Image (tube, rainbow, N blue to C red; front, side, top):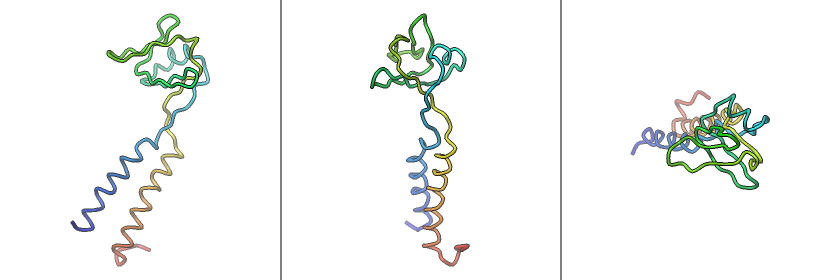
Length: 119
């Protein structure tokens, strides 16, 4: 296998390993009822004491938070919720992801092809 062909799987592996770096779970500062009704998020993470549960397509049904996805178990009383988190884009993590992938690939390229390196 040539050096050029090795870069593709390495780059793909680095990309896949860092996919989660562009977003992070952030706590919601308003009440669960208000957040779900106003934002209508696709996915949330609900904390009850020290246990987290992810719910897809959450809805408020009376005094219960439920998941509207079939075959997904998820009904939580609003009074039992200690924290709700939602996925948000992270500029810092995305920047570090870009640098963490680009810099090693650039260094590897310069190491293998010093005549072609722009430095």
